[in-house]
Length: 86
Image (cartoon, rainbow, N blue to C red):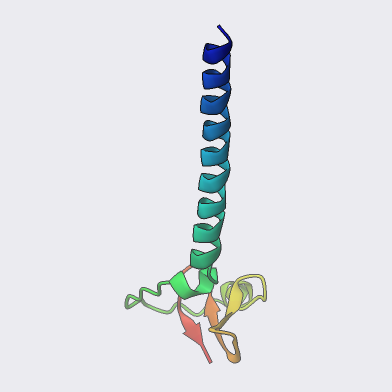
């Protein structure tokens, strides 16, 4: 009976050690691949007709809809469509 208990304790301890090592490996892996999400930004364009409407133009150029392109403050892109504005 004592031998079976000892054997089970060794098995459980081994499982805990394996789980801890796996968690460390996973943490290291995710730290290595963690990058800036802007690197995965894709821009797709399409031709479009521009309709001159002052209210629409003001809404489109608002700071909430624009973001800097690759950190360059002089080039802004529309978050929704990817159109660039210089």
